[in-house]
Image (cartoon, rainbow, N blue to C red; front, side, top):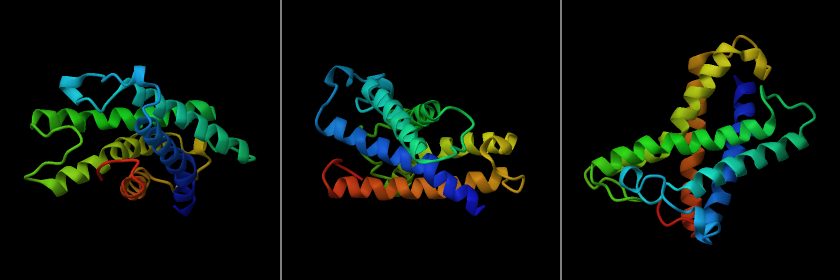
Length: 186
């Protein structure tokens, strides 16, 4: 399992953390302002934009491609740019249902539920990690050899370790981005 945790940190966590931080720079300095149009303002709110989708996919693709250039043997089942771009898209798409539910509940964009702040905050940190863990665990479970894992790597262990590690790092990075004032709220 240690092998998977190292792999997950290298090929999922680091590129998505890098993409997320770079995306916050894009937002903070309003780069690509023309693409900052909401995907569906009434449904997801004004913060889910086409610029966010593009930025996460491009930064994810660049991050994985750069990491792959440093690694003599890339243990990925697809091309590095495709893997990174896919990670960025999964990250963004996974946030949409949570945003849609919050809009239906009357929670303003960028805010937490006043009645259930802990639950609302947990949902904000778990949404992208949850879908990512599910997709990854399903893929690894079906084709472990594509990732160069042995048969001992199982669905639940991949899902649980990926969810805990990735959502924990997401929360830590969110807090750090607030501290350095690239992000307004945790």
